[in-house]
Length: 349
Image: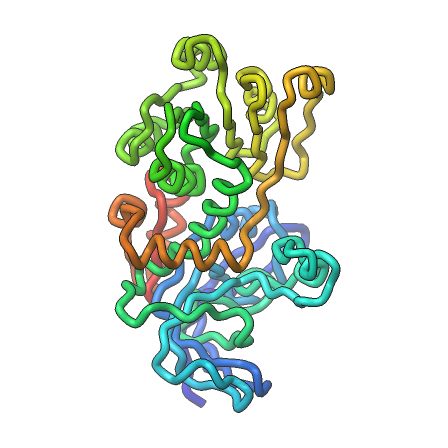
């Protein structure tokens, strides 16, 4: 049997684990609604590192990589609307389509998906030359799209979803707490919307500089600066109309509560199941504020993200820090992610 190189996750006995590059057999289609995808690009996500550190569940002996795109190599007999050679991007979160959340238009909250269906986490993903996926997970791409850039569509769809949840308006002062890869991608989406001020809060020097490069009007270092005082100064004592917590810690959530304007929307995007915080309900009622959650994205967010990439609305060259072969995933890719001096590292299997 012909083989391929793949990044396989192996669980430790307690939690977390390690990734090894292994030669394994190329997968075959086993169902009539499946396609065999020749992977062209796959982004490294912070979730990949969390899996290794025990901060996110994943199945043992699974090929990681959930931000991937590729070309249809083979297809099952039921796949009528895709042809061999078509370019596609993968929605890694497999949904059922029939649970109450799917039928109410909340497919990102699918009951079936919550059981663990994500490609590259619970099912084999994109850190390999080939991957088998159901037709329902694939979005057809324009024929002339750049495939390396297309690897950003999945995280970009999450940023589009967050932008829409926040209901960003032209007169808004927008604050993003955390300029990690997703915070910066969210910034890139919001920056295309005409707003009053875009402010980023970040400890890391490299990330603050990158936030300015991507169009932030102000950056704040919470280690040296009084965040609330700076936000009030910038907004003429009004406060922030939209706050996006791209970190998800107790401290960052409470930071958001310290700066919101009347009528503000505080969007929780970053996740940490251990985070807890106290709030005063009257502060919400009296000033008609909202606390909202933004979780991954829906099908329409994928469609919007495809157009942002295809029409070159997003400055891709500023978001892709480095492109590497699969052989360098562990030595270079994971190393750069841990250094926190990158936005997206794209792997070309």
